[in-house]
Length: 178
Image (cartoon, rainbow, N blue to C red):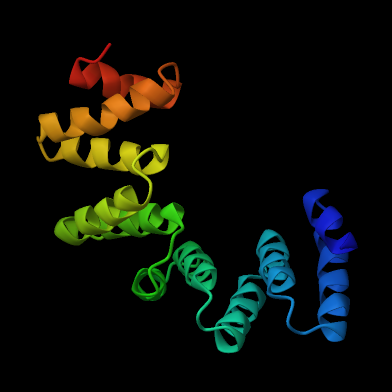
């Protein structure tokens, strides 16, 4: 779809126009709705982006991806309660997207809901125990909780997967892995 190339090329206004045109011909193209929402978001039109995602949820309520996207957008808009509710809907649908659990866990940590955050991050870990974002979140979470041994378990995964990543270096040093 031409709009996809326009979106990737930074031509967000033209992408919006072409996604709308494409959706007028085939209203069931949810991937186009996701990209339309992204284009609106990149233009700073978050209310329009939100409406598009709500449309996807109404058309395809079983689509777990929409709840991840809604959670991110609500969080960006400063509506933490709606973000949490959206992420939770994705979890209830047994989403396979590790990034949903990662972002949900970070939001819960930020809100001081540490027990819930750990549970959510562990669910993400169960889906993909090698996912670096989940392992980093868990390693850092455990480190901050004073649970050094638990932190080391997850930091070792990071060290094995990407030992030179500068984002991990301070954690490695703090845990004595380097």
